[in-house]
Length: 298
Ligand code: ASP
Ligand code: MG
Image (cartoon, rainbow, N blue to C red; front, top):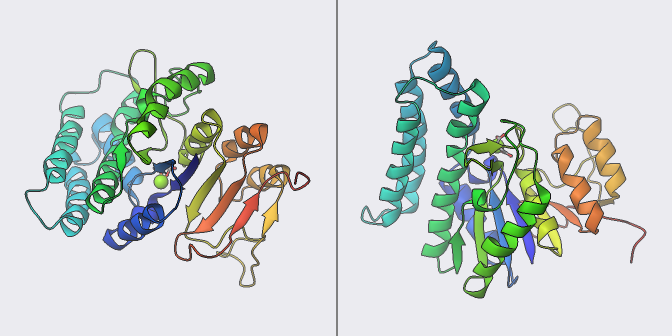
């Protein structure tokens, strides 16, 4: 088992989704879990939608339309056949978003936030899974809320590891008797009362680490728009160098000091099971990138 994680930039438009399909579809892995974030800046747009819904400063219709047009636009390019079932599927997800903001808020801001913002990952994974299937990949779409169980700390859900591990065994692993690949959402979890939670902004890396940990995966690869972990942020420095390998401890310190390559919670679960983490460029998948592992071990 291997786990791939693709962030928002790797699904931001038609070309990006095609590129992802090439990378994921071409791996020789027999069993691959693909964790995907919301497309492009969708999470930010959904945050604005939540604010508009909760506080009424902005018009929800305008933001909804922006989100709808963006997803429909990408989907129409990927699936020119207007009869393809993805179009109805997408429409139904977007209608659910309409419903989520139809009546005035009844829960806390954070709870409403999670119910609304989570739709971004549902949309992206539906589109990508359908596209992979269309291209002959034997994959299945799974709702990560069937197995990532959290408490009710909305926007920062704390994972119930024992229950999550059990659910993964019951719900996720059996998929591999029929499929080679499972496509699922990053960032999302669910409470015991079936309310959606999120794991904190940029939390998809963490989801990928949770799934890698609970399935005893051989490796986790995080696909990014940078060549790997660099010695400095290219936003501020011209002369940056790729770090080919580093220890888990170095990686933890790096994220602690504010480097934004990897979500800080990602490393620990991997370190506990000695699962190597690769950070690679989705623009140059043939390049090595960075390997984060226990450098001492063989
Ligand atoms: N889509 C979520 C966010 O933008 C989660 C993630 O990208 O990791 O924060
Ligand atoms: Mg994102």
